[in-house]
Length: 186
Length: 127
Image 1 (cartoon, helix red, strand yellow):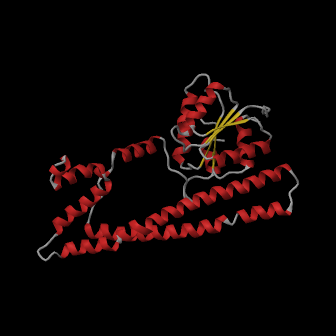
Image 2: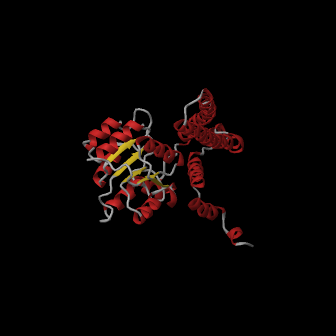
C-alpha cells in the first residue's frame, strides 16, 4: 500500500488544501454545506443548484480554454499589427510617403476590429462567470479567507505593495500629465 | 543650458514595441545615441559599464522595477546625478509622490507624444 492510500479522506483533504487554493475554497463550501444540511436536505439542494448554475464542466472543457485562446490570439494579432504599422511608419520617416504606404497602414489598423470582437467574447464570459459566482457565494454564505492565499500569492501581493504596482488605470482614474507636473512642481 | 544631442541615452522597458516608439521619438527629436534594456537589472548593469546622460525608464518590469532602478541609481554615488525620467502607465498619485521622493527628474504618463517627451527632456536639462 502506498503512503497515500494509508491516509484517510480527511487527511488527504488536509494535505491538499495546503497546496491548492481551489481545494481550499471547495472545502470551505463543503464544510458550510455540512453545517447547512437539514433533515430534508433542502439547503444542500440549494448549494447543489448554485454550483450547477456555474456550469463548471462546460466552463472547464470549453468556455475558459476558448477565452484563454482568444486572449492569446489578441496578443499575437496586436503584436503583428503594431509591428507592421511601425515598420511602415519608420519607412515613411526615411522617404517621401506614397498612397500605398498610407493604405497599408490603414489596413493594418483593422486589427482593432478583430481584437474588439474577440475581447467582447471574453468580456461576456467574465460577466457570466462573475454573475454565477456571486450567486454561488450568496447561496453558500462563504466568506473570503486570507488563509486561502498561498505563499506565492502573498509574495506577489507584498511585492505589488512594496513596488507600488497598480498597472494601467481605467479611463478617468489616475492622475493626468498636468496633475503629475503639478505634483512634481514642474 | 544647451542639451548635448550626442549624449548616450538608455531606454528601459520590457516591451520592445515601447522601446521602438521611444527610440523613434528620440530620433525625431535629434537624439541618435540610444541604448536599450528590458528591465532594471539589465539597465543597472549597463549603467555601470557606460556613463549615460539620461535614463528613460518604465516602472512596471521584473525582476527589477523602474522604481527599484531609480532607488539604486540614487544610492550609488557614481550614478546619483544621472538624469532619470520615468515613463509609465502607473498614474496613481502615490506613484508620482514615491518617484519624486526617490529623486526622479520627471515623470511621463503613457500614452504620450513627442511634444511631451521633448518638453520633459528640456525641463530636466533646463533648456
